[in-house]
Length: 54
Image (cartoon, rainbow, N blue to C red; front, side, top):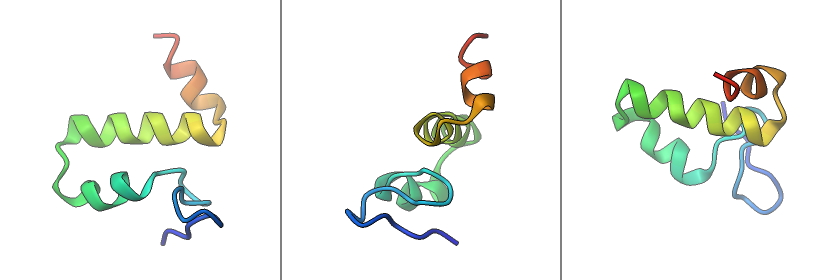
């Protein structure tokens, strides 16, 4: 369950933007992967940094 930050623009749990959350259900698997990569980078995830090296 997503919870938006004080500015109501980014989820404090997953790092997705409001637009990405809205898009998720209709997004292709490739687009979902890109959303996860971008949201992980926003959250400072080491996994996202490792993935960006490949």
